[in-house]
Length: 387
Ligand SMILES: C[S@@+](CC[C@H](N)C(=O)[O-])C[C@H]1O[C@@H](n2cnc3c(N)ncnc32)[C@H](O)[C@@H]1O
Image 1 (tube, rainbow, N blue to C red):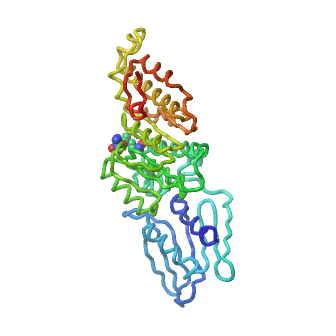
Image 2 (tube, rainbow, N blue to C red):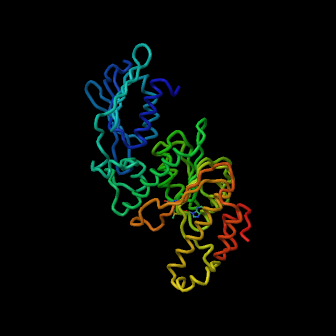
Image 3 (cartoon, rainbow, N blue to C red):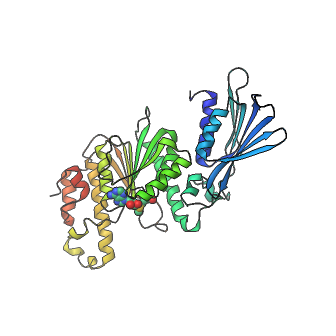
């Protein structure tokens, strides 16, 4: 039972391992079957083969050490805690939890650590971070080094992951998502899974997160990392194209930098599945560019390629936002990370309101016609005739 003292202790242990905040775990009061056994000490270590938990079995006259993957370690600890060892003491960066199962009803005491050490270097910038740089998945994905420091070429990626997690946390908090069941979250065109892992860490057991990616090598890599780090069934990756992936139920649909019309495929999948929250950061808006016929007054400006490119981005994303409103979503468009870190930084978030038509069909058509756009992938998916 998840609500009992032992269940809660195991939940906190699992969370600390997931988030990379485990400092150490000490098991005591062995059940006496092995008369020489005193304690078991567990702490995280980073080996060449990846992050592991080091188990030190302390006997009267010797120590026995074993390094286990997170999955193996958590499975063993679950069997040992409250059985072979009656007491367990968990130390994380933020709290201490002490479980006693010896006599009577198991008891759990949790105390917050007065001043939890900040991530890595401990400066203010790091304290503000949403994603702990020591999270083992960041190391497994090559974002941080073996001491939890963002690797220089991945600094921008780390900031993007951190900012994305912060924004997703706010959006999930505001959106009227179901609370009586597990959330179904899709990350379409998930690439190496940076944001998929981030979403899974943010939402924990509350959500089952699926990354969809057409490159099988990335999918295999992500599934192996998720398995190795003990994410279990709550984080899985599938090879496939966004358009062909059957989505029966989706509460949150994410697609960041899924190129060109792949963003529209993801939005359409989310809308068809009745998703409450859609979060996309479009890129490579190529589809409408050859169609654009801006008013004559702009023709001088549009001699410049960069303006044509920016105009294509603006028209495509503005059209998407209006179509989403027409389809019954309250939509926001904003910069999600500074342009200093990536030029592809426009994010569209949309929350389902159930009442369609905040932007009416005539307004959407007038906008498309002003720029000469006759066809656009999201409009096509929604069966919306632009002319
Ligand atoms: C620029 S990467 C972005 C990865 C990830 N979303 C991120 O922001 O870190 C785009 C990824 O989307 C994948 N992709 C593009 N179009 C796709 C489609 N139609 N179906 C599945 N995957 C797609 C590409 O293979 C690539 O890995």
